[in-house]
Length: 317
Ligand SMILES: [Zn+2]
Image 1: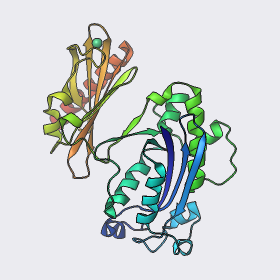
Image 2: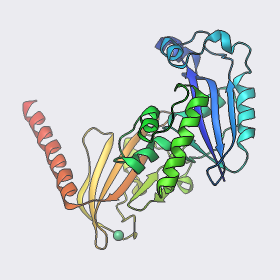
Image 3: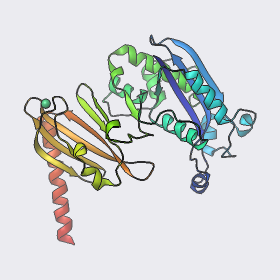
Image 4: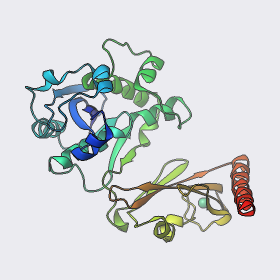
């Protein structure tokens, strides 16, 4: 299997009104990619500038950042042609690797806009190199800029950042070092541009110390929280029924937390994140992970604080 390290640059309108009217918030104007084989050796690269068809002005900030003028793009090929060639170039057996999660979303949104056949009908496995960097070198939560990672790893900065070809090269260099550093390549991500269409397509993956579940769509939060798989508190490691120490609670309606105890695996924290889907419905990303007694107490005091705040508010009104 090859690794396709992809980076895109896109343009957008300066004002929100034009953006919304255009039907495409971000118009891709450059594709850069590096192909690594299974030994992490670069075997090919892809680079193409794209003639815009939606926005005829370069966004001020974008223009300053990427140093591309509209004039330069006028003789380029259209998105359909360039993207179709790019996908052919990718081949049949590959996984995308991108810095963050935005590139794959915008690639698919642009493809949809031009009625191109989709990359996938369901969530697509990929590597978020920005996340892998955090897992390999930091606290798993922080998200750094590509330039930070390049400097951190002492990679030579020979060309300016923020162009698709340059950023693809830099991302590939970071990715190679992360892959060589240890066993982080098991932490793949899922792109949720296309959500699971039904229960059978839902994602359930167990990593060493945590598990991830991505649900199908629900009409609203209430129906999501009424689904038994969404709120299931079975242990992700052994499947045993757990004892609920802290039942699901939420502070803002976006995230829900719970603590459960498996007789064999101890304290487990559950977190449900409600996410908006493109159809204005919701889907759920749930993670479960083993936690220590200190974290249990943190969650309990968080829950108690929310209860007190609610009581106070009720009193005042
Ligand atoms: Zn267990």
